[in-house]
Image (cartoon, rainbow, N blue to C red; front, side):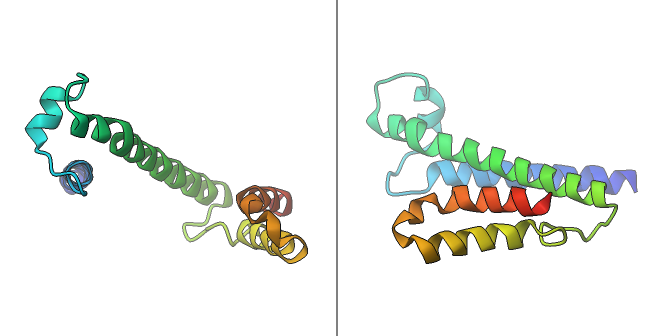
Length: 127
């Protein structure tokens, strides 16, 4: 069993690294991995600057967002002692949807505030 867990960890880590590399190298700018590796911290190449300033922060943000979502799901399952628990069990999703729907019904011009309304609704009706 322990050997299987180690192999799964190695496979998932390898897939993650390959996905990061693929997202760095794919796009409208064609650049090789060696160009990125050698010129990442210099300011000479404009293509590498685009990779460094646009793609790399998005990749890092996606990694942190995925980690935060997985930890929040783990904590929710641990607190409720239910391996099938999700945000809908205690009303987080319903509260968020209610507040967003109320915001868009009564003032549709404030659609930019939908994430804030969803957060407030999820927090207030879950407690």
